[in-house]
Length: 37
Image (cartoon, rainbow, N blue to C red):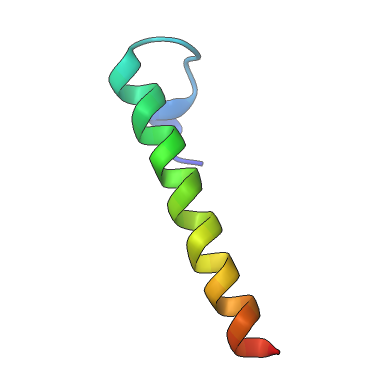
């Protein structure tokens, strides 16, 4: 995780960015797993 996400519940924008980043990582992870199979 990036350092500026260390403070919890600071602002809705930060929480939204964190959620979208996690979703992006999940999508990339699924693609990598599909490629490895």
